[in-house]
Image (cartoon, rainbow, N blue to C red; front, side, top):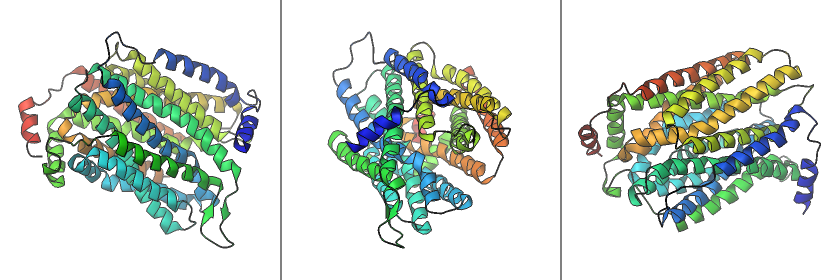
Length: 470
């Protein structure tokens, strides 16, 4: 009851306090309307088992992705509360991305080799370990937590999607047009969960101050540790749901009799260089998602102002509303525009958004400049919402099932490398946003080539021949 009373007091705060607060009601209305318009609807009768499949996937996905969103807004704040300086905190973040960079390709191969369900369970276990380390004011332990968390992040954004695509196309054989609908539902659910997680995490963190268990102890509880405890609860629930609702699937027929991890990586690399569309997809994923991660680190200083102090939790929720609007629009356009056509528009708009942010970054913190930055950020987050379901469908069309998990994690190697460079480069805000605009423009050129159909895909016989090696 105390938590509910605190929540009521917090959200009864004047919605006209700043332009951030004024944005809440219009954004919420637009989000609800678009989500309603994008609700499940089809003229055809759904397959009899589709509802059960959808429920099994979304139940697991929502609780497991909530575990990730609960942590996001509080990682930097927790490290800062422990007394680490900005350089030490940056190193902790880089270690997380570097662990994805080093282990990403092999994690994907293991996922195809030993099963996507098993790797989803591994995600839960690894992230529980990462959350547990957050209770310790100990730099090496926190570094270890960043390593396990980095591997878990690679699993979250690859193995869950791979499991869903394989079940949809291989085990159940559902119509292909329902796959785009599933991606829309997947990411719409994710953004709904993200909005709720930001509020829930903030309320939990505000209940108790961060406190050592005894004087001088490195073990802490309360405060910014609390959202990580909630994350552990979600992950434990995720383990139970995965074991109960999911069946195992693999990267190719044969399961444990399939080729070795090394052979799978080699085969994926051969097809990667043989099919230029896969190379362009890699450029698109690395460039756009790299700019997205750079944005995650830069939006807070870009909106920092003594005249208009930014309400970080509220801004995070608004960003997630914009993402949800984008995911809903992607669902609504699914039957009218191909995913590559949607991505062409998205990358053009995102390039303009970063250009606008770069033009005012590093200047005065006047409200007019802050409004320009905030509007550009909302526009970019809308593009992110359209991007993920669209690129998910495009990847499912181009990347063969037999090496899907391995290829998806190969895509994360240059992505994480780019993020490490952007974080360690110590760029100014203006320079960082200009670099992001350039990266998204590169994605625009790449998707234009893919969309033009000038690249000839390898013949199916060649793909099958490469697939036989795994």
